[in-house]
View 1 (cartoon, rainbow, N blue to C red):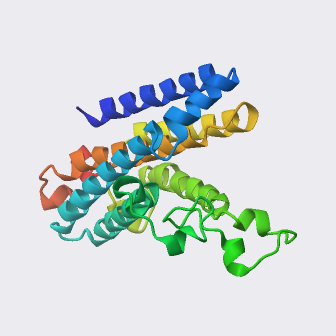
View 2 (view 1 turned 90 degrees about the vertical axis):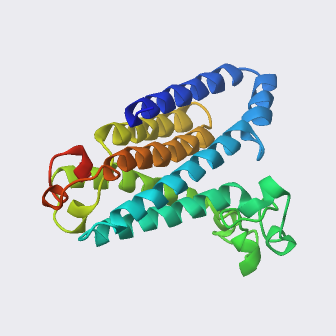
Length: 248
């Protein structure tokens, strides 16, 4: 399968999820079915996201290894080493560092976690800091996800829309040496971002679908870059060349 087809398939899957969400939102039984099949910690969405993050992790490791073998690609190696770390963190948090796979749970962490899980993004920081319910920050910090989720959404928009656009527009500095995915990946993320903002605010909660789309973006984006950097190129065309193998 080509990266373009993988992105198209991801778009079809996300569109299907939105359709299912809309159909099931009409009555209480449907809403319960959505929760049971898709939103539970062992539901279809969480399991699928974990698989996508694992794929992104493997691909980013291979990209980092590929660019490391080339001279003058320190910026590219650092970038994809960072993407590897980000994929590890996302995968670990998605499966609560093994809790949802192996049944392991740290009671120490679970005791201060809003969902009693072994992860960071649901930590009850209000409890850790001893904030009373009347404190203005109590609600926000009672589940760290209320802070981390928006921050993560902004970070992904920067990584998959703003920086690739700057790279294609000839931005100076280290970005010019970093292979970026082709425009269809940025379009995929941007469309999903707009859909999330509109539907989540005006119709019903679709945050979990957007998080699936984010995981898909990381996987297909890494796949797209990997198909370029793994192609042998001569040193004369490694940096700044228009060829796909040069990371455009």
